Length: 133
Image (tube, rainbow, N blue to C red; front, side):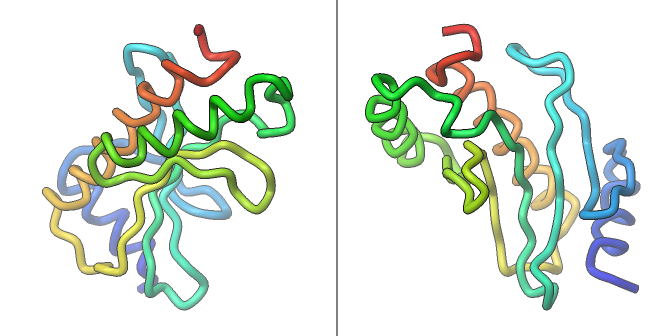
């Protein structure tokens, strides 16, 4: 059984709806700012790390004159929001991610990581150009 299979079983136990995708487990959330926020759970290739991630727009889509402020706001928010990172991925996407090398999570621990990620997406949408600001 893969680590994602174990995580799927835990999601079933705590009543979180998801779908199996090629790259991981996909959840869709309804929040204050989103009607269909997509959160993906994936593992590192060696399954030693678990990532709960939401991708936003490409950083290159942000107007040049707004990028510096956005990066400042992302760094500041990373210190204020519990348990997540606001990042620019290697593929140039803005993202919110929670990561852990504790891959034997309880249902409560997994739910906390998911809740932190979902909540942080609303925070990022609050200051990211193109998401209602």
